[in-house]
Structure formats: structure tokens, C-alpha cells
Length: 226
Image (tube, rainbow, N blue to C red; front, top):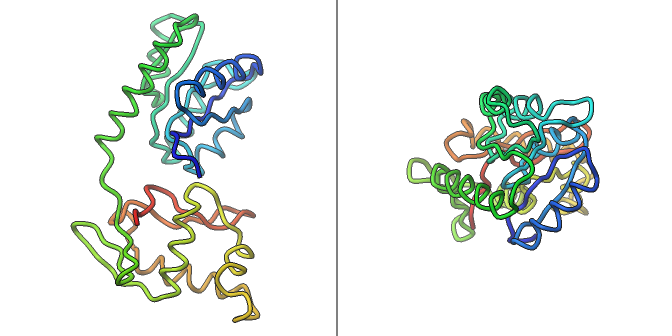
């Protein structure tokens, strides 16, 4: 996986997406683009990005409503909105929906980079330190709480943490951890249940194991550090 900060650019104009991707890539970002609000919401909810740049106008959709929906879904990453509209009401609407900053077109590229970095730094200072996952004693711990995992629970959590933000299907998990040992993929659900009970409430450790329909399981939140 890349160590570069991952950024999602959402704009319905392919040329603008391409230009932003090139420019942001030159400034040290791993950029992915999306031109539809529904797809962007799905990708943001998967928690695989460090920040997002979202245009106010997305064809028939609204970037402001996308931001509002993302915040309602628990997405906390920094969001900078772009718009050719400079009216105070538009900027206020974007910020009230949950955007962290607002850049009016046309803009100097250095300004966008500077605003992104400010919001990323702010988010980093507010983000709690990740839980620690120790291979030595199979413990998961924070300054306030610690739990001990079995060998298989540790392996399962380690696997999910290594793919944080990207769902793993039941079959993929089974093949990695149980192939040749069990005949039923249901063993995956059993151990997911074990882990969820030990981690409850997930706010204690900064992440939860969520189920994404027809996709599988993934970590939501800040994955544990090794």
C-alpha cells in the first residue's frame, strides 16, 4: 500500500478531474477521481482516504448534499469544496453541510495545496493515537483499555487492519486463514462475532468492524498500529 496521503477528487468534468489529479500527484498525493455523487459517497464511507476535494456542482447532483450525506454517514476526513460561485450564501451552505474549507474558482494551485495541508494538519492534531496491536502477547491496547486476543482473533484483526478501508469478502478471509482447516465459510462470521464482542464499544479502540452488503467486512475508523 502507498504511504502517500490518499485524496479523492469529485468533479463531473473529466478534464478538471484529470488536471487536479496530475497537479495534486506532483505535490505528493495519491489521487483517485470520481464523477458521481452516489459513487463518491460509497467510496468515502469505505474510509480509505485521508482527504477529499469536492466540487459544488456535480451535474444533476449537489456537492453540498454529498458532503452532508458523508458527514451523516460518519465520514470525518478533511473536505475542501471547489466552486465557481463566490456568493457568501454558497460558501456558508458548504461549510454548514460539513466542509472544512472552500476554494473559489479560478484559484492558484498553491492555494488549494496550502488549504489541504492546513486541514490535514488540523485533523491530525484532533485524531487520537491509534490502538496498538502487539504480536508479542496478542494484545490490543490503548492508554485506557486492553484486551487479549486468541491466535485466530489476532490473525483476523491483523488481516482486516492491513486492508483498512477496503472490504474483504468472507471467501477471501476464509482462504487466507482457514483454507484446509474448515469446510464452512461460516467460521469467518463466528470469529468476526468474537472480535466484535471483545472490542465493544468500538469507540474505546478507535475503530469498528463493519459489514458492507455484498462486499464483506472492513475496519471503520483508525486501524490499530503494529
